[in-house]
Image 1 (cartoon, rainbow, N blue to C red):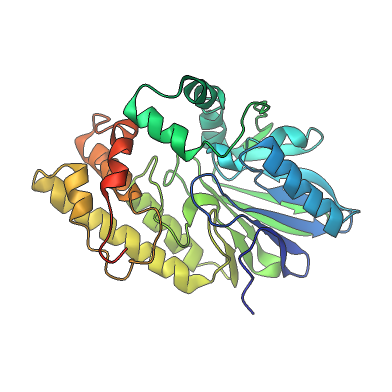
Image 2 (cartoon, rainbow, N blue to C red):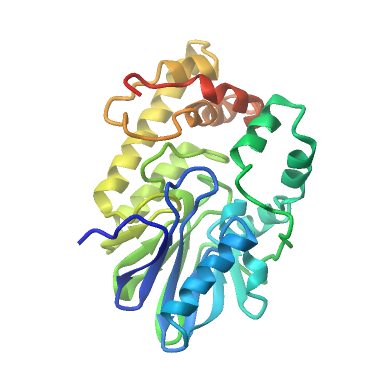
Amino acid sequence: MPIPYRTGLHQIAPATYAYLQPNGSWGWSNAGLVVDGDEALLVDTLFTVALTRRMLDAVEQALPGARIRTVVNTHGDGDHWWGNQLLPDARIVASTAAAAEMRHAGPQPMLAALAAGGSDPGVRDLVELFAPFDFTDVTPTYPDVTFDGELELRAGSRTVRLLEVGPAHTEGDVLVHVPGDRVLFTGDILFVGGHPVVHSGPVSGWIRACDVILGLDVDHIVPGHGPVVGKPEVARFRDYLNRLRDHAVDTHRKGRTALEAAREFDHRGFEDLDDPGRLVLNIGAVYRELNGDGTPAELELMPQMSAIRPEGR
């Protein structure tokens, strides 16, 4: 039976839960919970203190005896860790690469941009995208346990496996596998219902991460953004990444700009995806890899996102 895609805590296995936030667009991320008796492990906090408090209140209401002793941050984007401060007694775990990114990705630049209103066009777009969120009371709270490769944790007697698959979406992406329940939390290695954002790349690394997921014995897959799905949606997402990479390599060879390339992208089979403007950023990420000089910068491309409208939408 499909897990309903509505805001709140949803049980997806006997003692494993997903906290979902439709519609899954910018900043509206998912989280997860693994419970054994009175001990729990939380997969990611949310973008703001208020949103994280709302989630923790839902956990307390549904599972009043559960104490969150461990938090796993799947990567360094703020919508997956800026609520960490509400769990001061928990150990916080992330990959070494993610932890390094987190120390350079606190809310202060966002707050400064929001306060100034953004004189740069790219910053103005950030201001508009994140206007619904209040970051003023965020105190960056960093991991105190880091790892490379793989790490096995416990939630009570239950095994939770962490698998580092970055760089892909970001430098330090981690999958959280609950083998006993055949559940996987992907962080932003999987977007469902919308175009992803390639911050780091390479896209080939992201494709390999999808292959890792498809090789795991899992039934329920909780994406970083979007509804709970199964492996067919992961295969479809991998197809998207393959098309994106091949298209960007071809348009780069032809001398197209990232915007021109995004306008020429073949949307067939992906017409339903929200946030099509992200194509400009994703093609730009492939171009940065091919150019090797950091160009075109992501912030410079953001004002061009609004120019992308697939046919029929």
